[in-house]
Image (cartoon, rainbow, N blue to C red; front, side, top):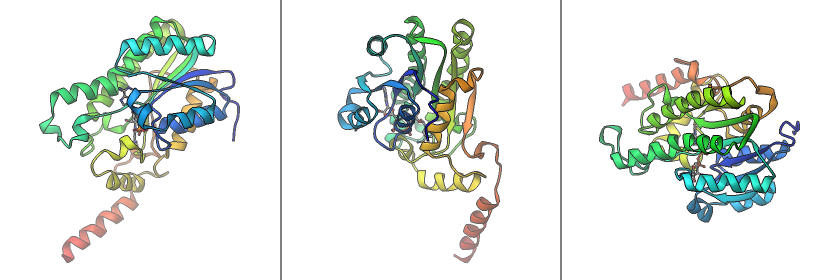
Length: 278
Ligand SMILES: NC(=O)c1ccc[n+]([C@@H]2O[C@H](COP(=O)([O-])OP(=O)(O)OC[C@H]3O[C@@H](n4cnc5c(N)ncnc54)[C@H](O)[C@@H]3O)[C@@H](O)[C@H]2O)c1
């Protein structure tokens, strides 16, 4: 259902790769709510992904940019403002990648060149996006910037690896930049900490199936889906959340406040019984 929450608003959406991507669902919802936007991703992702399909369905334009490149980001923002006739109102940063995770390197055996890439792509790119937008004065007053995070920024989750460090930095950038952008331009900056979600990046984490089952059992409301994340992000881009800034907002069915649930305990007890029988 559409509420016209983003009627007349313009934005840039980073990170839609295929129809499983959280950014893909957010783009679809933003379109339903009346927004116009540019879709951006790396040249490789555009070549191998399905972004053109999404652009066609939402009447948007695709502009390639490696979010670690200041040059690419400058061109992206300038072209986007030209295309949409002025400043924008919202930005979604939905970008993450770890070569250590991809190559199966464990946290006590990290490749430091990979680690630098993880941090650059998954966290510093958020600063680069914000700094570029600020220098070009690209966002209207009361605009909204959201990046996607994960609870591993606060708690240790087996195998989330160096992405945990990247997410901790990402959330810190939202606070530090949120202060400056709020003070000077009334622009809000937040992170949304989403449940595990079966996407290309999510499924790359080893043991993902077990993790998603565990968090489903632990969360009183169950895991939040990509579609539900899209609904939440739309509220953050809308004028209904104008005074929410510098926050890490958990969108996880309650997982982050739980210690143990009945459903998880039942499963644990079952596996204990099986171990004893063995
Ligand atoms: N899937 C989950 O379980 C989960 C949970 C919480 C948070 N998140 C976060 O959500 C965000 C989106 O991930 P997703 O799960 O939709 O997976 P996804 O694989 O669909 O999206 C990741 C995107 O990052 C893009 N990307 C990688 N390097 C880039 C670069 N240098 N410049 C620009 N874009 C680049 C990829 O092309 C891809 O589109 C990530 O920040 C991820 O950490 C995911």
